[in-house]
Amino acid sequence: MTPLPKSFIRAWHDWQRAPDICLPVVELSVEHIIYELEHQSVYQIGLAALGGDLSYVAKRASEMLAAIETLDADLENCLTSARTKEKLREHIALTQRLLEEMSKLSSPAAAV
Image (tube, rainbow, N blue to C red; front, side, top):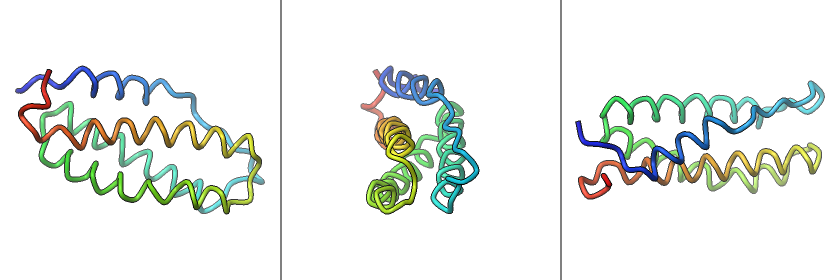
């Protein structure tokens, strides 16, 4: 199996070490449910990368990157506190970084 680039490994570790976002029950919304589902999808793509299925990983990561670009606008319209929005934005940034690294994985030149 081709070794994974260090930049992917760093992004994967940073994303996994991010603190969980615990929202008060009154702040739970459709956006939070979508966030949880996307979190699980990103985790599954990361496991596929670690398992060597790089063409699948690059394709799914690219699809998710396109979808995540709309999250900031959706978050702005969400009725939640500024503090919660900031926590979610930080997590979205970590997720974007990881997905960007994943989207590069199908290229043999990506391994470093």
